[in-house]
Length: 406
Image (cartoon, rainbow, N blue to C red; front, side, top):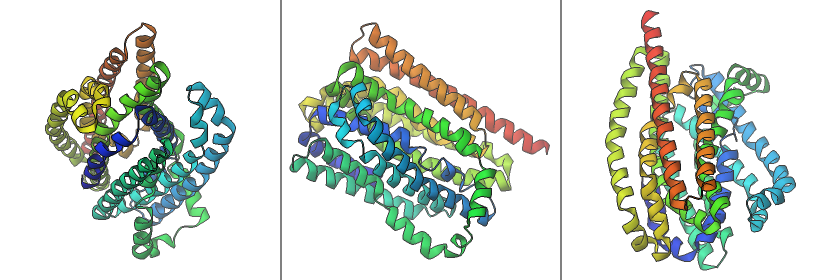
């Protein structure tokens, strides 16, 4: 929370240093990185907390690190080959100048994710929280400096990249000092065996994660493509201001929840349902301030971020039910990973992606205004999260009943 408060406190300064168009360029970069970055470790990082055997976990960590070094190489090659085509498709020629930064962002994100889940396995929540504070400071400082120097979209993008990379060194040093004995068990054969045992994570969960990321990131890309970079920038700022702290809260809670749920699965499966219900109740209470903030956004945004950002506040108000649903559902949706029901997650992710893309296209093709399209997006997304909650709860009920019968 402190890390995100730093980022939010810096936002009124940053929004006065950059234009909606420049935020639109950042939105496209962040959207592309969000899609590629979720597969930076081939999802092996998610499996790290699961095995009881320390050697298997260490070799899964090795597989995640190896992927974090190999995937960015492919991204770099693709950015040189397809950069101009992607920029032309989005009607944003200047984006081609920044496509190579996707590889750096993917590498930074992959390394952090692997180290983060290794720390999660050891319940080192304090160290993880400290890196969030570093990320908030690093990103804000670089973006402000870029704005003062008139760096344009590059200042926003490099600030985003610094924010993702911050914390990698801290977690790496901590891991080397504390877990040298476990890391010494990593070898090519062990990595291969662990990767084979948990092959559903790259084969199914990776595609699910990409579908999930597309479902989250595609709306910003579509708003840019349908209504122009300035409108896309307004939409992306609104999403960033409210969704960023919520996503950090959701991620932090989901990591604690995932760690505890993995323990219960190995030690007392019947307790998983109680943990799920308790977490859900707390998240429902936490969603009330989100709805209140969304309702006030049209009046708060011009005052806090400048008069040019009034439309962003309207977009936030239109989307507030989606943000509240994300906060409630996303943390407990980790249940499906722990239950190794990636097939259900994949089906939902692809269904949500198709529903969001189709509904926004129909809204635009029907001549709706940007606000009308955002309202359609919010309604479809809220219904999709409700469906995910039902699927997840049914999954944990069946798992608990199965453990009781055994």
